[in-house]
Image (cartoon, chains in turn red, cyan, blue, green):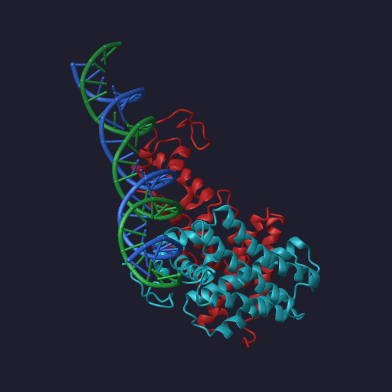
Length: 212
Length: 212
DNA sequence: GCACAGTGGAGGTCAAGATCGGCGTGCAGT
DNA sequence: ACTGCACGCCGATCTTGACCTCCACTGTGC
């Protein structure tokens, strides 16, 4: 049962890989398993088997299961935050910014590896290290949008943060819903729809104060 | 160390409670522990100790840890879906509907027990039974809003679902952000802000088709 | 005074993360 | 080219920890 023949391996026989290549391959295998099963249900045996190696090899590259998970998590956390930041910096047109942000979320979610589940559906939020990273992602995205809202509308920071969190939530949830529903709407159309919803929501904020 | 003296108990000494009262107390203790630690980190010993009883008693009331968790989950899943449904049925004014929905999420999140974490931050989404329930919540909320959107704007169902998911995500994320940030904004003000964002976003949809 | 019911602490089982003695392969030196 | 070596890999194992049950005690009603 340590039999090879899984898709992630280059050859069908146990090959001796250079250190870095083996590491990358192990990360890829771990990601597939974590995404498919979640952290707790994923066994180190599963990951090793998926990679076509034995457990000791895994432990020769990573000290433990958590380190493996955190390595993957860090990669993708950085990715989504960077995408949102780029969306803010890429233009000065706020409507464009909203569109680009929404696209960022859809792209992130639409990536074939489904790695977004590591961030959005982690079953380890109770672990401090993971919690910190996941919260940092949301805080980071919200902060980027918050700054733009403040400088362009003049509402208070706490209000702007709340608005930003709403926009982030809309994009995030809609993107995940779109994917889970089987892409019933073409991607560009879905993005445009959510962008329109968000833009119409936020656009008129500078003009009139929010009354109770 | 099995000493009593925890807040959840009526008396400080081992008391003989009627069946249903004991069950309710066990559920309350379990909820506190699950909310604070998550499913995996919560031990049955912790729950029993929290309730001031011994483990056998716990197992006389619930067959296993999962059953206990599902019982709690079901309660709160029903609660939030019902709240959103009520928000839709309570009025015919769509602006009011949006406001009531947002309030529903804020109320749900603001409940002192923090039970919303069982639904929104469950570390058991990978378990089929739990996944089904959590997805059913989101689907249920989205469906209720979707129906209203369809009947009042005439957009296609798939588009309406996408819009509804965006609104749900905005309310959900904003409510959680508001709470996590320490209620920096008064509740009514936060609700009004998010409601305004959502209403401005959705209100103009019947008038003009969403162009690309 | 006595039977009884229900509690409390100690233990079994099992799964999963983390590790040790063989093995086969490629290489260097002569 | 042949032999000894060193290194990376694998099968089998250990241990921990958490869910789930068994022996002694206590308080009560007759």
